[in-house]
Image (tube, rainbow, N blue to C red):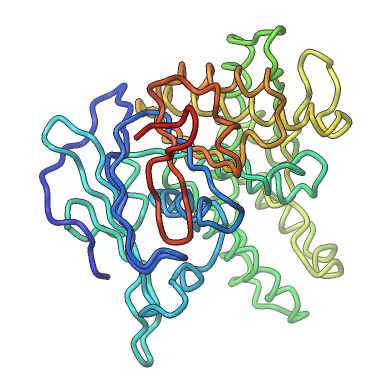
Length: 401
């Protein structure tokens, strides 16, 4: 990976830190052959036509956390068409000693060599993007989440795991290991007469990982629900939500100590082998859980609310999560909001900008029309995005940056 920034001294953030991206540099990333963008505000609005590359910038920022970014794309898809086949992205965060530099990317493919993500902190290689969590946390909201409450449970589990990952950088690794173990059990059951010792060992691993995954999810949901209840405002245009986790394993985690919960889960796996073999998959576990959300003021299931109410509810949920991340990690998260203002009326847009200004985080927003950001405070930066370029917006009242 060709690192776009020179070495610089950095420091781990102190508790209560609210890191800001001061510089974003890209090389061969999506629509950007090269970009060097300096930012000096907490609220950053990116305006431009559809397809101009606004979401590409948010995606680049989302890579500085474990996982596949806000689009959940393969790394190779992020390399610019016509480029080297690799890409590089780096950010400089503010800091007491000149800022910390985080870098990630993909080396150009070599014949016969697998593509692998590279991560660096101040130019020094680190094992994975989980190491970035010492310096930066992220939360985001994209249009792909608009159908969250009416979509399948798997969508809500992925959303929930992203919530957990923002406070526990190791959660993604546990979820991945659990899913691999479940696939191994499914293959063994397909054999009809699997080796019992091997099946016992796989189920022991599933139980250990599954209870850890369920416990992490349950803790995050419990804390989030408590924070929302303590800070709720029935008059807010973004209604408060009640959230809970539904699932057989979660009920076991709530009732038993971890070791006993693992034993119980392992017994369930053993006793249901025949049923799972007939079904062709493992039916019991955190892979079958669901995040249940209600519109608090209306005491109605989120799925039964109007589209506008669901959008407002989701915004309120993400803002509450950002506050939870700050409380649990000591780091106010970077907030990425893609096309956030497009489907909000002006009253809700103005209220959103006030809430974001109070949040304490740096916030990056996108929108097709710069007028959507007319109610941002004067200290905000509005940037004009065109294919491959980002420049200060100069039009009417927008003479910023």
